[in-house]
Length: 192
Image 1 (tube, rainbow, N blue to C red):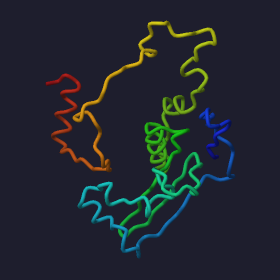
Image 2 (cartoon, rainbow, N blue to C red; image 1 turned 90 degrees about the vertical axis):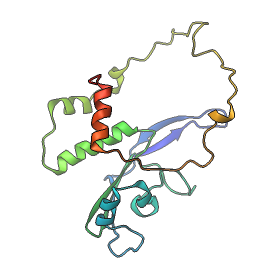
Image 3 (cartoon, one colour; image 1 turned 120 degrees about the vertical axis):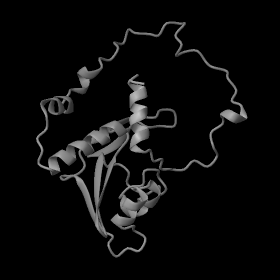
Image 4 (tube, helix red, strand yellow; image 1 turned 180 degrees about the vertical axis):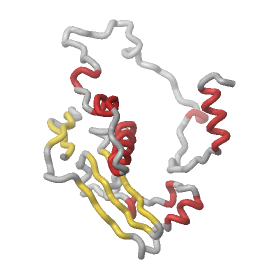
């Protein structure tokens, strides 16, 4: 389907909803084996798959950060299969109004299981089919925050130069050794 925004005005951000939009899921297949701008699987592997070697303009049917105001960014879920020299890259894009990063990772995990002919566990089926209406019960209309609620207080803190974000944000890849990850996990679990 598509994500649509109903009721958006200059003073109201509207409500995002999913509307049936296509009879089949959006799937794109691109062959980049002759594209000199596309890396090979070997070069990606040797570089340890940095994001900088996977440009959206080549491997994704939708830009995550909109650069083209006319691009249709409404699909709920889109997959692009990219053939490169030595392998395949799968781009999975979920519309953030319908699917957060954790949900997208879970869909990728389940898709991997399905493609490998592995059955879903009872927990995966149960959790994947939970009713949104019972996961977190909404507050009824009579609820109002107390006058002393920390969520209503306005903070008057002024940021210092050291607290300001960097002026040129960019995607980066950070690699950790297996040993470093094991030590971090042990510390997180209070094993050290």
